[in-house]
Each structure stands twice: as structure tokens, then as C-alpha cells.
Length: 258
Ligand code: CAA
Image (cartoon, rainbow, N blue to C red; front, side, top):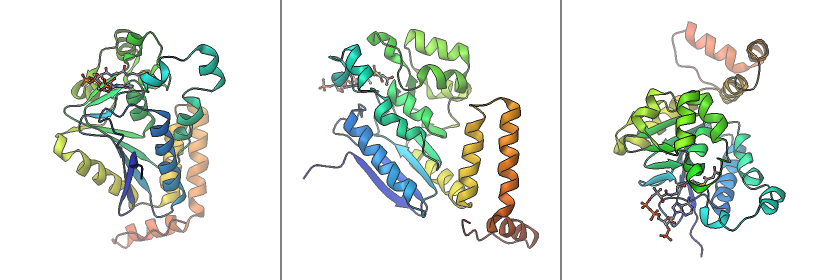
């Protein structure tokens, strides 16, 4: 029987999804991305799961898209078969929060996969980079678009034009990631953040993610209007009544996710 290349385990309401291809560098082959998309779609459909931690091996979150598979491609094939778009784009549409827990290399598509997540935390040994220029290509899964938004233009230009990787401490300083921890503490810390999120009401979690994401897609006025509409809609939830009552009664809220 074939070994699964993506492992999923549940920690209460948080799923831990591990990329575990035969190669600890986790080259992001179609098979690996397809398996990740399937795992994530199962999680999206499971109302008991409120958040996911995505991680790789001790050596790499992922060292990028599969160079072996891409090397012989020509333009017509890449374009007509929608290389990257055909499977990676499913990951953009996930509605529940995704926390990347990065050890080792997060290069090319690996860095782009981390940036598709909602929160990125890393071990001290992590390295983030867009080395595609060294392969004679441009990043293809969002590197030139998400890196400047996350880290600023100068850092993004430096990373994409030189291909040199940023250590975790620099990634933290420029805002690409939220936290750096010791390697042994990485999964525990990512799960702790996941549990902190997951104790809240699922429709509110999803609305918060949608609203923050909207800030990257709209003008400030449009984004503020979108947020205000979600804020008003929140008063239709039983969990708004419960959350505010619990505060006033000085007890922990018991959310019902409605
Ligand atoms: N795709 C396919 N295979 C890869 C790979 C990748 N992205 N990265 C590593 N491998 C393979 C190597 O070919 C090698 O295979 P063999 O054992 O069969 O020879 C194996 O993994 C181990 O790799 P190394 O010997 O190179 O390991 P290392 O520890 O010396 O170096 C590394 C590690 C610095 C991560 C180096 O492997 C590396 O630079 N990898 C490529 C990084 C890269 O360029 N990523 C961008 C890919 S393009 C992309 O992602 C496009 C996009 O935007 C979507």
C-alpha cells in the first residue's frame, strides 16, 4: 500500500497537517499539492475543526515547486495546463484559519505556501526565500505579490532579485512572520495558537479571516464597509448573545457556532 504523503491528526478542534513526502525537503509535486488540497477540503467540511496547523519536516517546510517535473516544460504546456493555478488556487479559497509552522527551508513555492497561510510562525533555523531567479524563472505562486505586502517592497525586491534567503530573525523583523521559537517548541506553540483561535465561534472566526483578507483586496472605504456589514450581521448570532452575556456574568462563553 502507498504511504500517505500528507498526515492529518486532530488535537481537539485543531488539525495538524504535516507534509511528509519521501523527500524531507518536500518538493511540492502535483501529488503533494493534490494530497494537501484533499486534506484541507476534508477539514473545511468538518464542523468540529476550527483551525489548522500546517507543517513540514525538521529539514524543510518545503523547498519549492517540483523542479524535476518543471524542467522539461514548455510555455504551451505550462499555460494550457495552468501550472500552479490548477491545484494551488484551491488553497486560496480556504475559509478556516491556517497557521504555518516552519522549520528549515521555506523556499520558492514553500515560502509562497507559507504566505498563503493566515499566520506564520517559525523555528530559529527557518529560512525564507524566493530563489526562482536562480532557476531562470519568476516566482509563480504569489511570491512577487504576497512578499511585498507582507514584508515591504525593498525586502521583497531584495529577496526576489538576489534569490538569497532571509533567516527567521530577519523574517520576523520585516513582518513576514509573527513569531520565532526554538525548534523543539514549534509544533506546541503553533497548536497553542490554534487552540486559542479554535475556542471561539466558528462563524465569527470565518468572518474575521474574510474581513482581514478583504483589506488586501479593496480600498480602505470598501474594506471598512465590508467590516461594518459583518459586524452588524454578527448580532444575528446566538454566539453574540452568549459571548456578551458570559462577559457580563464573568464566566467563560459556551459558543454553539451559530
Ligand atoms: N524540486 C525537486 N527536487 C528538489 C527540490 C525541488 N524544489 N529541492 C530539492 N530537491 C531534491 C534534490 O534534487 C535532491 O534530489 P536527489 O537526492 O535525487 O539528488 C534532493 O532533493 C536533496 O536536495 P539537495 O541535495 O540539493 O539538498 P541540500 O540539503 O544540499 O540543499 C536546498 C537543500 C538548499 C533546499 C536545495 O535543495 C535547493 O536549493 N533546492 C531548490 C530550491 C528552489 O530553487 N526552490 C524554488 C523552486 S521553483 C518554484 O518554487 C516555483 C514557484 O514559485 C511555484
